[in-house]
Image (cartoon, rainbow, N blue to C red; front, side, top):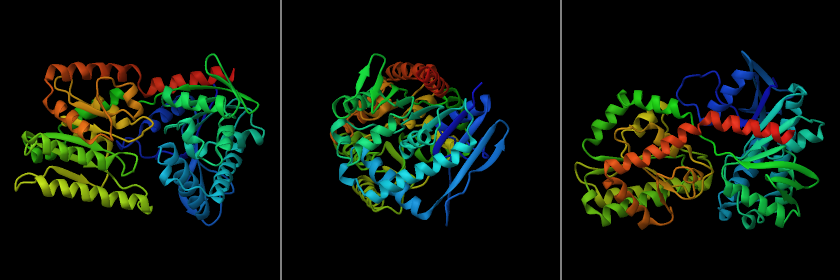
Length: 459
């Protein structure tokens, strides 16, 4: 059996098993690596004065954890510069926040070359290499240039932008050419696939054959949609157990007999947080019967706090939440609880379990696993309602959700009113359809479908 080599910008904290904080990617990758053996390669998270001369490796049974350090310059120009200052906002349709700098792009290529050079000595001829996310688009091209002929697949966790949006990137062709060095490129949704194929046909002068086989830039590859999922059974069990935890009981006691609406997001401009809180305020304005009987708990741990746009977002969100509370609060009720900190996965599962509504309204999102985790965490006898942005990849799968336009404040308020007053029979019917989907297409099914497709594409 071939080894699996997973490459990502950062690797999961493998030594902290069972912490309850593992994400979907960590669950999928670790399960595969433990089963067939392999390497997880990525940045250590450490900044050093000079680049690593070789990868530092630690063995965990069949699994090898391999990491390298980055220099301060690499972190500033590769990570904060091109990856998160250019690709992240562009791929999330925020051209107004895109900062393009040729020096940053050269650093992006240089760090990908560094990854390739430190990874190559660890590889075997029959390894299967699986590269993850926008930080490492050029990695396969760098490995090919170094003589690697292994099967290499790529999965993009964030959206791929529409053809016209992608064209605004000055070096769009270099990014597209790099992707074509992979055997298989996986996207979250068919919409993302279509956007990429539009570029191949219209701009690259490439050819798209049956079965989404692409011929472009002198290479042939396969593309497809592989919507990432969650460990559905594990989340459901965790939520059931966490429903009686001390933290969940404290939350229930503080809410009392009021209905709880929950939102859980990184503090990021893609998540639609300001629009969301404004919509909740509009709910209280136009449906006054909700005053005193509903609470919005918005958990938004800080993200990239040293970046100006994120500082401004935090200030704006705090201002909007303060306005809603100042307008509607009573001496015994505060409508918005805004927590600028994170919680363990297990704690969140308990919070999901007791929430009548989940408000998941990103302005653009590759998938959004919070939506799926909320559904999996619900009580089958008395499930809550998911209000979900149409611009989240999960909206393509979770048909039982109330789908909203996150730019439509009044429409989101109306959806909240429908969710809060929805009869139990309808709530159960909607939840059962979504849970069935998540049971069938869980994180294991996602991993296996991708790796099967990679084997077929390479053949």
